[in-house]
Image 1 (spheres, helix red, strand yellow):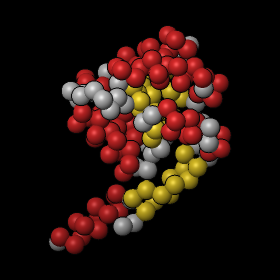
Image 2 (cartoon, helix red, strand yellow; image 1 turned 180 degrees about the vertical axis):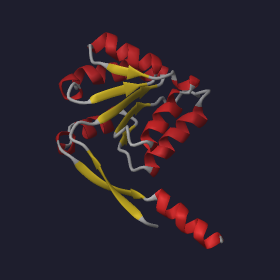
Image 3 (cartoon, one colour; image 1 turned 135 degrees about the vertical axis):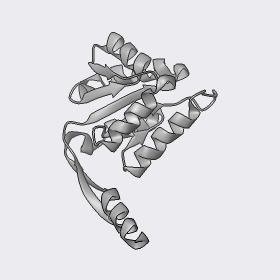
Length: 155
């Protein structure tokens, strides 16, 4: 498979998402790392984005709530190259009605080699990484080239 080098800029686009049982934990985490987060562009799913903004005064662009398509909106922005990092405090002990959407978001983050933290300790490691203050180049599959090659083989 052909690969393509992409650069995550110094100022990151960070998605903040949390299941209902983890919203308070994510808000606390955002307060703890407010200084770092204030240097980046933040977005999130509906209720989570609003609650973070209200509690921290950090500007967080809100999308729809997860069950109403917010996870898919974030996934689409990953595909468009507009999300660099996902912080998603998921609740592994509670069934989620929109679990297929969550799985699709996690899958697309993996496909596009996007750093994703699904709990506080991973988020702590990620937010304190030296890469948070610098550009980072990573390789992703060159989907356009692979599609073109596949189409040629089918002729």
